[in-house]
Amino acid sequence: MGSPSSWRTVDIVVAAAIAVAFGVVFWAWNAVWAATGPIFAALPVAQYLLYGVWLLPAVLGALVVRKPGAALFTEVVAASVSALLGSQWGLDTLVSGAIQGAAAEAVFAVFRYRSWTVATAALAGTAAAVGAWLHDMPLYFPELGLAGWTPFLVFMAVSGAVIAGIGAWCLTRALASSGALGAFPAGRPHA
Image (cartoon, rainbow, N blue to C red; front, side, top):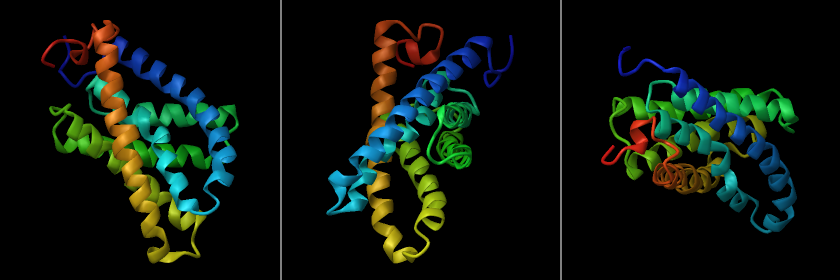
């Protein structure tokens, strides 16, 4: 038996399955993002309330697998699938995924991979959003400067906390209740 931080085959398979599923979700979400732009024409920054969907696999992967590297692995593989399916952001999708996954990973690492509460999940989702914000703003909105970027941070952080954090925590609980996570600590009572 390996150390508690060693990945088992089932950990790799399930993290990859989550990632591939979300890579397909990303492909669809990219189209939703493009289609909803006109809805937010009066306040374009409000569209960033939808951003958390792109951050969800990092938090979900970590909550399910509960091993170092799970958030980063899951987000990068999901971004890779999205890029392969034709993301409008091209190879930058991979860079973005790595930053978002690393930011969520950092939160779980700070808690030494021992805290799996809704608060930790929300914090990880928020951190992923901050990582995305640090990446996106200078690249896509360089003309706005820090003052113009700040409203984006607020909307992205809320989306990260609610959709990616709380959403992933609820999804993990639902999967555990269904018995789908029996091979994982997340699927056991009081885990």
